[in-house]
Amino acid sequence: MTGLAALVGDVDTFFEQHLGRKALHRHGVAREVVSLDDVDRVITGSGLRAPGLRVVKDGTVLPPERYVSPSTYGYAGLGDVVDPGKVTALFRDGATIVLGTVDALMPRLHELCKTIEMELGHPVDANIYVAPPGAQAFQVHCDAQDILVVQAHGGKRWTLFDHLEPDPAGGRMLPGLDAPATDYTLREGDVLYVPRGMPHLVRTESSASVHVSISVNTLTWADLLTALTSQLLRSGAYARPLPMGKDVAGQVGPLLKRYADDFAAALADPGHDRLHRAIHGRTACAEGHRAGLLTQALLGTPPAPGERIALRPGTWPLITGEGTRIEAGGRTFAVSPEVGRACRRLQDGPLPVAELPGEVAGTLVELGLCVTSA
Image (tube, rainbow, N blue to C red; front, top):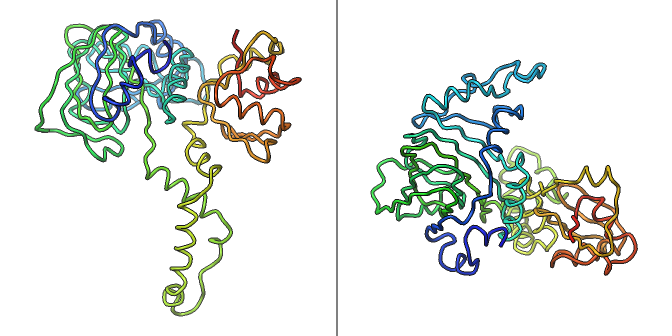
């Protein structure tokens, strides 16, 4: 099993019984998501900058000045490069290290996130929490994301409250929450699903802990309507100036309903292409799994007839212009109709290279839209 099934088991059961409803705890099913060497390399050997790392102690996010150095790794003019020595000292003193959206720096984890993203249709990324014994980084809070927790090292105790915040927005602290709760103790390889908006408290006990939080950054109706509204308002019809005169409001009043009705009609029936751009054109969805892209360019080896090609995980192509344009990852490609048709077919799954005409497979790989497999 790969992707979502590797973490939650039967995906249909997960959708029916758990997604957005209740927690799921599975024991020892995910032991190769990240290693301690992976985490150590990112923190101590990658020249990571402060926006990608936070340090938290007793519910307080420490100022970056406590753990950055201007001269680390010799970067000229950068004052926010993480100092591994300072970070390690703070960890020994009881602070928790938080690596934000770190999957981009760990190819195996990034591929897992993007594979899950393709299954769920919502942006997916991952944070890593490195906590010393006896640590509690945050008070009771809920998140605006559905979370799949993978315990990578040590153990951690999660207290989940039988309550769902209907609008968790950007997440919120919920001190003094009075609701029934269940404790889950995670050991290495365990997976815990925490629904969006479910309050929780997380603590380490006698051992240090490393866990991965794979976050499903759930798109809401507010997100979609905001994106569609932004697209529609770029139309020339709404670029016209308001009337001029002493009583602008009085002149606008009789016209407003006509504009509002036209806008509502366009919003209710935006068309497939506009919907696709609003959902999959977001930055978080645009960053597909691109490992191997440069290697393929350096070697210049075309796909072999015995291979198959598939869309890169996290790639959501939009084929327009009668199949002669492909939009993906914030880029637009002019292609032949054959390439456009093949790309559309690949949205249903991988294809044998031998089934595709001419250089179609090679073109899709060169554009960075596809990868090959045996």
